[in-house]
Amino acid sequence: MRRLLFGVLVAVLPSLAAQAQSLVGALEWLPPGSLSVESLTRHPEEQLEGGEKQSFYVDLGRLAFRSPDVLGGTARKAGLSCQACHANGFATTAFFIPGLSNKPGSIDVSHAFWNLRGEDGIDNPLEIPSLRGVKTKDRFGQDRRTASLRDFTRRVIVTEFAGAEPDALLLDALIAYQEKLQPAAAVYEPVSLRQDLADLTRYLDALRVPLAEEESALAERMTVMIRSQIGFIHERFADDDLRGSRGLLEEWSRQLAQIALQAEQGRWVQARTARADLRQAIAKPPAVLAADLPRSLYQPEHLKMWLSKPVR
Ligand code: HEC
Image 1 (cartoon, rainbow, N blue to C red):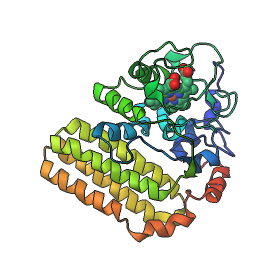
Image 2: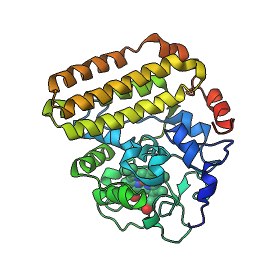
Image 3: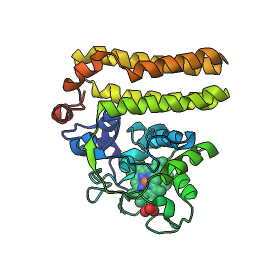
Image 4: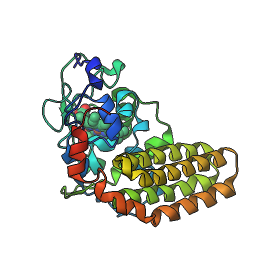
């Protein structure tokens, strides 16, 4: 669809937010009325084949699936990742962007809003599919034109969402993760701080691999992705008086930046020690986070109020 008003996008926003993980990015870059409190505070349980212990490929893919910087253009700026539309591998049924969706759970992915080069000149929102059981499929997309999950995933990143050409490892990882999404009934659970912190420890476990291999480019890439996940948690502690929690999260993010720097400088021993220390700190976080939680945007009522305020 062509006629989306770019100028309107930064306007005022009463009930903003589809399931984006970045509240602030969505407020700034998606049109008013885009997102729902529902999809920001509840999602289907993940249920990966093989449970939580997974290979590095799956864990890297899991992180990349949640990382807006895998995509480009507006999606990245709005903080949208694969996870925004395919929450935990299911379809995000409440996803809705005015002008790009014709009903909740649909979206036009061949639109200049995402990628000027991908615009097909047709108003054609498609239903977001669940990726559950995608491993067993032999054709992808509603037009069934693509026979390889790898080709389809590359197309999603580059053609639909204007991302940079993914390298082989990133694609391997995204495929490995998607192949673990076995068919399952969607059982909804709250989006929770507890789980977001558990995810951080999991990403830090995966970060051991490039630090052990002394692969600085991969270590750097992963720290960038992990820092944006910390940023999403940070956004949920939005109130002025939750400065303690925000400061703590900023400190963790700085430590990750430091690890990337140490990796770049070849100070591997320090980088590995810093990773282990940070992993431990996150596994037993200071009490301030739990104390601030009731006033954070993990609480649906607070999130609703926050979204209804004028642009900050
Ligand atoms: C803004 C929402 C949105 C985002 C972000 C998004 N998708 Fe999708 N996805 C869709 C829609 C809509 C379709 C249906 C497209 C079609 O049929 O051509 C789809 C289709 C797919 C399919 C085909 C499934 C099938 O059964 O045919 C795969 C695989 C997929 N997406 C993976 C991904 C991955 C991996 C990412 C991140 C790199 C991603 N998607 C990001 C909306 C999204």
